Length: 235
Figure (cartoon, rainbow, N blue to C red):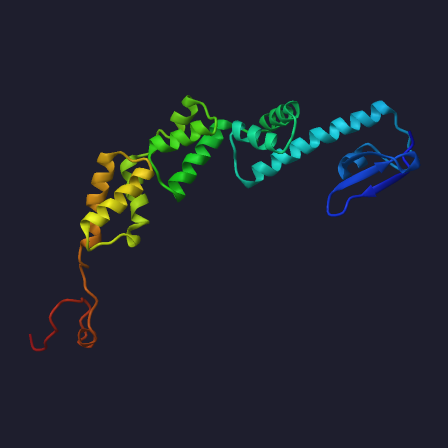
């Protein structure tokens, strides 16, 4: 069969290839069309057309995987699930993942570290909960445990609570305890950790300012330390 027309798709880096009588043969990426040296008048066998289809499908699977990783690191299970939902066949998925592993773009250990560090920095939660999240994403038990080994629940609970204190009432301990306790429980912290964190945060929220803001009168006395009596002369 002879190529009679090459038509670039609108808004996509792909090319439609047509044969005699305007018959559509296949569509390939612009890069593959260039690599295969496709041009009007070139003759292709059925085997060559099929080979081009297979190569294009492999490249599309790989490109789809790269786009997923460009958003954030992912586990291998995540990648399989997301690519499968896009209708990509399992052999092509496995080939793309193998290629990514070989290039160092896909690594469950690196993903587990990334996930744990991101949680610690942006949304602190318990070691147990982060580990459960990693297991859900397909990371092995050993890898998940190693990734969360340095997570300290007491510290994580306090950091998580500190970011939400302004939204909790500080004039009603029962309400404060209920709301902060529920929040910490949802973040996976144990009862004891939550209890100690609530107590600490309640004390800090209720603690008066050590140095109250000086009044206008005090500011005019020349004192540099608020709360001290006015300076006097002659002594």
